[in-house]
Length: 249
Figure 1: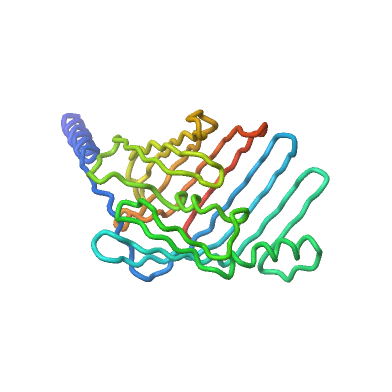
Figure 2: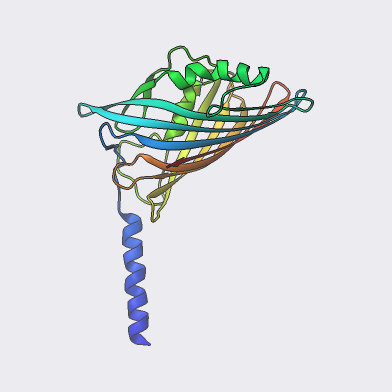
């Protein structure tokens, strides 16, 4: 019995020591090795116009370090599938199939620039993003601020399990500022789990919604392995709920 208690006490102390270990989350991706992701979006709009949209997209993200402080990123979308239900109208699009109906052809025309162009942006080693460029792609198809959903902006100092930090970004298409609080929760079998709690504010500073979820990041490169978030927004007389899941393939 004494031996069992002693073993449990040592294990408890070891776990406590691990929880206090601080880690510097500084991006260290493999250069020029594409990472394949699947992004799933489910959007439900309840308002004057009811709309349900499910979207699945595949993309390759490639990282290239540029000196000690900068990383250049290029992204290539390789697949898109959309299912749309607007009450009296339904529509679908699958980029892997030849469009046959007028609606499918309209979708294909809209998504063509996205599938043919290359997304580029730069970020520092702590994930702060700059210089987003997606030539020929309209904001109706791709909101540049959405690249923030690919990862977390890390603090510039080491952190331990249980500690939190904050970050701000802008969602230009919606005219919304995102104020995020991140918390390092644990180290799992696949990587570090980081909880995300974001408050969304309009131009006047009024809260119009939230985004809550988590990210799992690689324990060596600190690149996102998977994430799941739920965004709820009230604006222009409509309630918008979006569930987003990202995973590496």
